[in-house]
Image (cartoon, rainbow, N blue to C red; front, top):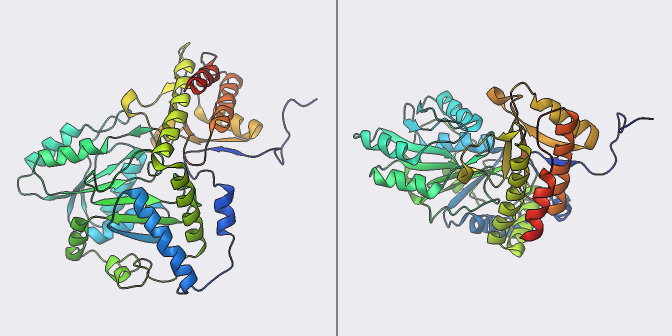
Length: 397
């Protein structure tokens, strides 16, 4: 008698607990099930305008939002191309895989990227940003680039603190923020927090397939764009502003906007602040489980600062001598649960539990139950009872 499902079709639904792409609600899938229509037709333009207006409401901005047929990396590239000139100097703390990748992209366009090292398990200190900008008397630094939620480490930063750090230095640098794994999952207010450019994508908190990305910009950023000279064409905001859609140099993708309109409807029907609360609650349930598992010299949090632990992804650090990929393989092959792995230098050292988007209590408890079983089957040190701790928390809140 076999003790687990043999190779081939796995019964039931895949529990996709990767930190993005994430689960897509059925109503969003149905909304995108559309025949091709004229993207200049009045029916589609009404959908497009409503979807973009909804996106702006969720961003808490009335500024321009430029959209692209791309993943978040494309939005990074478009933002760099449109805001800077060759040789411009930007400050980008090295806080994890994604900030490091964003910096490499900027270097590829000939920018001078100052990337001070930080403890990846905690992230940068706002005071160090003030100190560096205060020393920049000639205002050589054109922008501070921050990953709001470093998906690779599970570390989230307080953006008002970063804004205050720049203001304390009296420095005119732009504030650029990657919100790819935070937007739609926990609190974000572009205008109130003084953010000049926001990079985002469709496949996480917005609960859409990958392939639609955007940059939201302030008036200050738009003015910087008018003086920027990096070569660009397909991602050129000036060209986009001259088009009816104020985005897309070329064909406009149709289906994502029907999906985006439905996604915005779902989020606003729940209430954006309630969405943030739900994510915090499910994240805290996950943290309660990890806290228990950390007993017996077991797995623990990669993020060492409890105040910075993300509400959209928890990175779980393995004990010395144990491989996170073994845990992930058991979870996927035996139980049809997909967890995130460690990226590049963190490969094998941690696994990541995504808790963002279209998610509820049974889904997170199912995922946590499989993680606990997988730890046991992989003979990874841990204390039992993590799922019970999550149940206790969720039933009391």
